[in-house]
Amino acid sequence: MQVRKLTEQEFDKSIELSQYAFQYKVNKEDLPKRYKMLKRHEIWGEFEDEELISKLHILSLEIIIENCQFAMGGIAGVATWPEHRRKGSVTRLLNKALISMKEKGQTISFLHPFNIQFYRRFGWELTASLNKYTIKKIDLQRYPEVPGSISRLQKVDGNSQLNVVYEKWSKKYNHLLVRNDYWWDSHVFTEGYNRIVYKDENGEPKGYLCCKAADKLLDVQEFVYVTENARRALWNFICQHDSMVDKVKIVAPSHDQLPYLLNNPRIHQEHYPYFMARIVDVEGFLKQYPFKNTEDPLTISITDDKAEWNNGTYTISSDGIALEQQKGGLSMDVQTLTAVLLGSQKPAFLYECGKIKGDLQEAHKLEQIITNLPAAFIDFF
Image 1: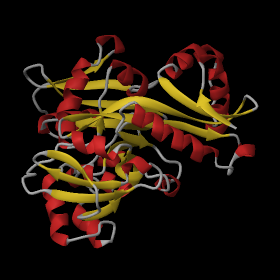
Image 2: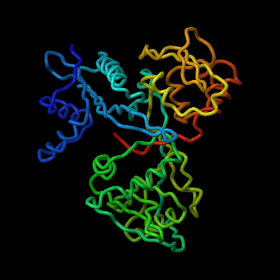
Image 3: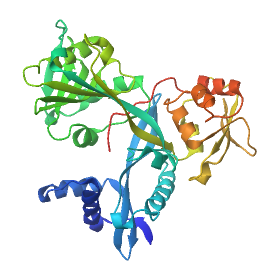
Image 4: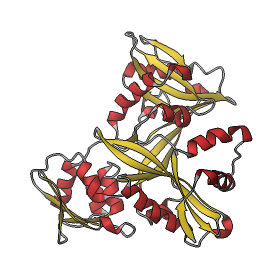
């Protein structure tokens, strides 16, 4: 067995495995676009006599936590041919991916799990969930008109207007993705989805929708706004589809409160555990993290079964991050640390259920020096 990166000449092997594992078909005319996309990925594979038996992709991305930007390795496309499953191949690939991400300075990693329990074994933890709403046509009740205008943008118009809104909106949350034009075009507005933007009376973009109408359904993948007028105007645009659709589906971050604002909040709602995260390099991540009120030092001891370089005791103070020689302070595993620092779970809850051990007052101190913004993630890879 050999674990190594795939060359560009081996992209067809990766595509063939993905098509089988994820049950889709890449048309011949779409292959050049797929090759171009794969050139952006770092693809690791395990080979047996030059036969690709399993693979995973690492995407070089960035996230924001409290206005601080972190290099993130996105794990995607994890697949194994059925005849080679349950032989430890994916374990070896994930171990190699952790080393590769650390070497590139990607202090954190995200992935969309096929099985949450499986990836918890490797140090990833659930950090972002989605709310999924299904709203019947009868419940599409409009607001009175608000100032401003709704328009439909074309791809040639660029994404700068939408990104202005997205960046302002993202300040309400942690661990959202930093987007560029390539990401907007290839991952947000996929085939059939429309760019709908709301501009206020001064012509400033304040909200947008990513949506598609088909088969009597309006599918809203992103409903993003930074003012109440923007929310109402975009909701009115959704309601304008009442003669075209039987229902509307809306995807939103888990802290979204749209149902409360409806005349009939008794709509179908699903809370969907979505993305997982993992700190790849604890020391590097702590040094970048925007801690606050650190005059009173706090010490944490971290265990990591899959990335031994993270095992250690760290003191957080106004002087920065110091690696200690002996264990002390609060103790937790790398999954728990990830959930805490991303704002996914509160230290008090994790202490109560035994995920954090040590002095309760120290756990309260930890809560005071970390972000108070909730975690959210609305992209996919």
